[in-house]
Length: 441
Image 1: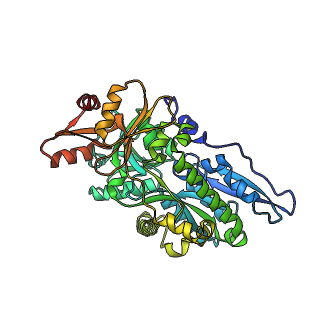
Image 2 (image 1 turned 135 degrees about the horizontal axis):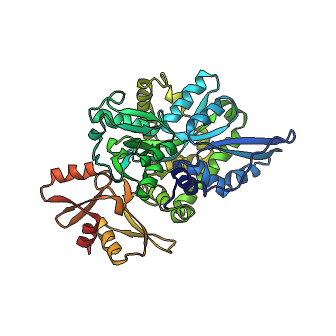
Image 3 (image 1 turned 90 degrees about the vertical axis):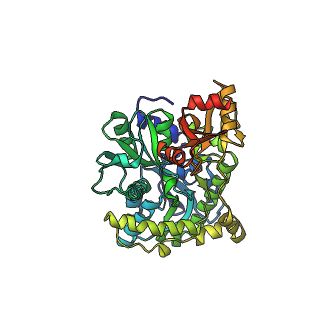
């Protein structure tokens, strides 16, 4: 996974889930082109983007409509949600996927331009906010958000990662507008800036923080799950398109549900197509939970996000209730099927090892047991994953901050949360990964 260029590695990491698929133009009155905007570099939308495209489920659902039309799908890849919104409000994209903050901008922009859109389903979510992370250089002396005061921080303004940064800084007593020097950059640009030392920290969404940490180019400074506020990505559709072709939208949502089931049933297979970092987020105990149901907790979180965007003068009031429209996904999945998904709870975090050459991971009842296994199988482990002892956020075992407390060995995503635990437990102490392995064996 060592690459000479961040952007190149991310492209290899995330685009390999894509299959070949070209755009098509209407050849006659019976040919209809459906345009889907997605983000190949945002793995939290794979069930409505790269993985869905790779599996071909949408095309199969369209072929099964038998309504006298021939359907073509034009898959358009974008780096962020903003250009998808621009194309949707211009009537050029029918269905798009993006994060929660961009979804609100999508809603506001659509209403403003007379091209209303609606949130029709969810792709991946984390009820605590663990999908966003602030990272700093691996050799940085920064250990907490308080250390960011007066520093340069890269993020994508208007993104969920920016929302996490703003809220985290506010809780730390730092003015997000005046307390730091914020640079508005695309994720790849920010990642390169961090590696070059031109910024002190980077706040981004999946999979950038994990990718940089895995490559040894960054360490976690703030785990978004510390906010304990849900964050998610979802699918938005143009209102005019949904009303004109409801069966097509329902076909997309059926296909998305199939892709979700595939990912949940074959997490290792899906990750093996790409790299270890994907399993960190999309694995059986990954940071993201994939489910198309529009859960009330996520809608509530979306309403809370409006104030952050308003404070940043990125939007005015947004009527979230009118933006959310789960009628189509309910019809696509059936009332009982939708109710079952709506009631489902995220899988509990767990410790897992992915052995080299294996198509299966091995689970352990505790991080200490995982460490004992790793210590006995040096050189045979492709990746090892452990949940943060306080937030449950999954992280790479060799990148975690370890704490020894009596007979326990506890992993933390960040130095700050580890130190907070140590401060509350007199017998606890931070230990190195090597020491943790020694203690476990």
